[in-house]
Amino acid sequence: ASAGPVDINTADAATLAAAIDGVGERKAAVIVQHRQTHGPFVSVDELARVKGIGSGTVERNREKLTVAPVSGPGRVSQH
Image (cartoon, rainbow, N blue to C red; front, top):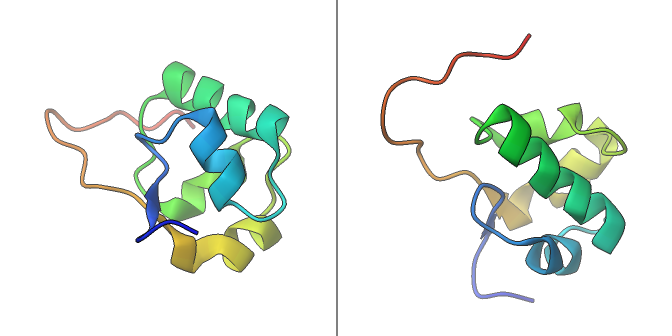
């Protein structure tokens, strides 16, 4: 286990796979791909929008995950 929560906006796939219970290398790569396509996550809850990641997975891992404040101009939501 790591010393503190893992930032889902900066962690690489291997780190995400190790930190998130229920997420392996493949799903972790999908998380990274989603981040590259849609921009940084604004909250840990947004992780549930990633294909293959459900809200149950987010709830189970909430304490282990974090999102650093996004700097720069406001991000446009991709709804």
